Image (cartoon, rainbow, N blue to C red; front, side):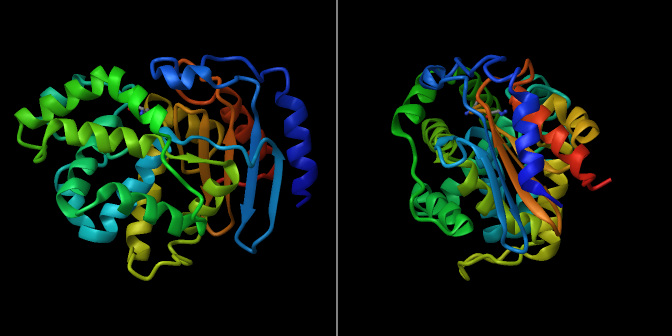
Length: 304
Ligand code: DON
């Protein structure tokens, strides 16, 4: 497969779309990001890499962190995680509150905000210093110590994250949040504020493509079966009310973030990360979706 040529073709074919869409200005610090960025980083399991565009530039991973948060807690408490958060697609926007009341404060899945907030609460209960632990875990998956929180982005979201605050309050009223509301919101915003490049993210997602093989840090144990489950949730819940569309158009498990990144995997074959900050109406990268659709079409690779 001539991946160099395919990435160059995709670059060309999406060029008219770059700059379209809307950046996530509900987090004021993210509104400053230029929309004309575009990058792809492809990492195959035989160790080869292919890139185009600003693939070494750092961006806010936002909800992509929800995959790492879930994996971290699975590595610590295993399937008990799923007692407080379900694994069903929500079909609703990432920050929706509507199902939470009907479903007694149990979020539909760990990849919507409410679900990740419950996972955050578990992190607070489990670790002495969850902020450090999260960074250590992500660094170990990526094999790279130069991964950090962005203080300005975290503080910016903390000041404006009114819906997240509403969710934590509602879930606390149902007994599904054990820690202080302020602490949950703060840790959650820090996890979202992690900055990584397409290259670093592709390295961190490699282990998901490789059925869990290659976790460098032996303190972390996640079974092959648990990796399968995390990947299944990526497929069914990774794109909120656009999960069906992503499966239909792209056909890979993945996870998006409002920073404009999308990380996806072809199990047994590769991890791929695209970044372009302009979002479509569902909060997913407009160019990123198109680029991945072109990639799986041109390469004929999809889990289906
Ligand atoms: O909680 C929020 O709204 C953001 N920190 C994360 C949302 C997000 O990335 C949704 N993904 N597409």
